[in-house]
Amino acid sequence: MGSTYMAVEASAPGVLRVVERTISEPGAGEVRIRVEACGVCHSDSGTVDGLFPIKWPRVPGHEAVGRIDALGSGVQGWAIGQRVGVGFLGGSCGYCEFCRAGDLVNCRNQEFTGIHRDGGYAEVMVAKASGPMSIPDDMSSADAAPLLCAGLTTFNALRNSPAKAGELVAVLGIGGLGHLGVQYARRMGFEVAAIGRGSDSAELAKKLGAHHYIDGAADDTAAALQALGGAKVILITASGGTTVATTFKGLRPGGVSIDVGVGPDPIEISSMDLIFGERKLAGSLTGNPATGDATLRFSALSGVSAMIETVPLEQAAAAYAKMMAGKARFRMVLVTKNGKNGTAQPK
Ligand SMILES: [Zn+2]
Ligand SMILES: [Zn+2]
Image (tube, rainbow, N blue to C red; front, side, top):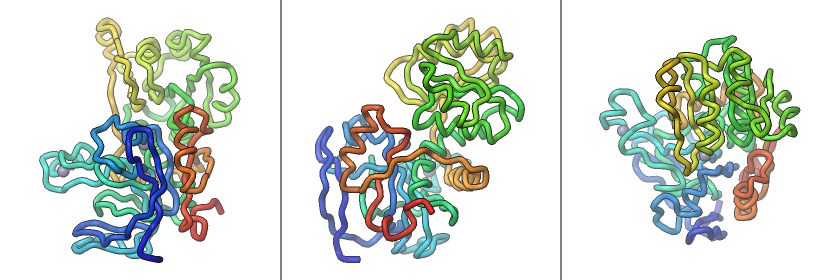
């Protein structure tokens, strides 16, 4: 490898450009990764469109998979040549109150990949050693990429939910997150109702493993869920406060709606619906690295995969635009030249 690498950086709001950067050594407690593939996630708009305070220029991308090619001082547990994935959470500090209590997700010093530090729209990236996840050998880098954020987010929320095998779980939205959520819910042993918009998604929902399909554009979703006995869990993968509120009444007593879809609209839930039936509304943020490892292993073992479209890294701007326009079916994945020569392509 030469002394430079290609990266795609956000240089101003809405602008993504291909640049050449100089390779640097990883600092203490960091690993350097030769990136093979990186997924394009809706949250990348936090960087590209400057929704978070961003120090420009910044390389987006928090679904990065590659091989470690250098270890900074003091790094333990990782080896050169090991294939790893870097998700949204850049790595916990290990010493704050939340880390000390074992809550790595809510670490007070957590940096977000592609926001506070450069991410995976690049041939090379440097990551904090406490962040990465292990990629199973039998999974390609391109297939693994979307599982690091979209996969982990839906897997973690369902795995830590109160639903038990055989209980009704609804997945609201069948997009980048939802098409994985339906697969995980089915493989975890739940009765699965997928809620989409329009009759077109019915066939896809069944193919992904849903037992029931509810057309949110035509049906009363809450009544449809109650007709099935009421959902123990509703996994909300679509943004939109009204949809969340109307579906909430589809929970059975003691049920919980778990929101993983970020949107600007407030969610208005009536206190009657909360109190009578003791229902809950909760948020869930990706998951810790061990759950990330479990997401990848579970996906490999049970045959869960994201539907992906791969494009070369240099076309990141076009891939990002397609995702933002809602035209990706369902996850765009950037592949670097390391990936073309390595393990990025499906076997
Ligand atoms: Zn993401
Ligand atoms: Zn911490």
